[in-house]
Length: 355
Image (tube, rainbow, N blue to C red; front, side, top):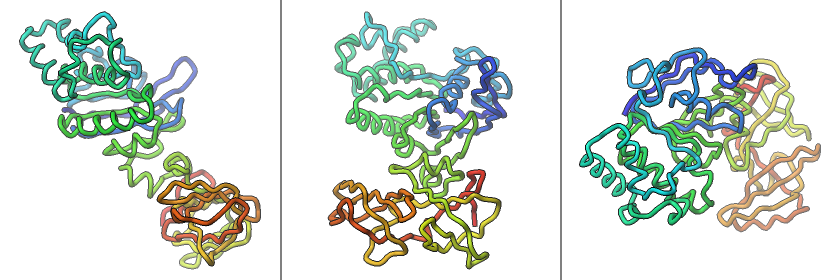
């Protein structure tokens, strides 16, 4: 396994800027997920590490070796693609062994590595099959096995589960987490699926508009988003973002909602507005007597909890949470309580205001 460092890396395609001045350090053995919307640059950044895209400016170090000028084969990393890229006329064993035969490894070493990868991925009974005889999940495991046999310093995954159905994605996600625990290898994983990021990552790198918005553990980016973008991108349903005006100061600072309700703040406001107050649905709850009232428009029953989509008197839309046996119906008037310990304040630049 190897540590990877990016130092002020940039990339353009013609006049289009794709990555701007990105610096990042990934520890040896760490599982890091690049997360962001389409066009945020996450796949380009991964391909730059792999050597499949050139680096226009900045430096790349893999395992202590400057690598931005090295050919892909010299970087000793293995990439697993979204589309599997298996040879249809070869068996599973032949697909996994192909790259090793190309570099002239002894046949005994090749067979041992293929057998060990098949054991780890529980594919021993599939080695004689061809890709057409496999399910989507099995094909993806072959692609992962082909990477494992190379014994690389780092594994790079480019949205490897996006072609699988929902149930199979969940199972394969668990398999990937278990594989990381067994191998202890450095892994970088690209996805736009926040569930994959939250369940797999040691740290998440959130990309937006060619730059890194925030780097942190899953719980850090969820509970302490650095920007309005992160707050709205992480979490399902997304964080409620309410336009507010500020009143008072110091320990008496408060936010006035559009319907006139006053919410006390634990944060001393700094910067300039317009201001937005953020609160996640689980911290905005339906109660008997609350801080403000709203009208339920849609009720989503999830078994253990109920999500109540509601509208404040000024028309602001919010999502609140109630118990699993909630009696709320669309059209009902509901009282809402704010957990003031879970509030987030964002300034006019979309930056989180920290207390």
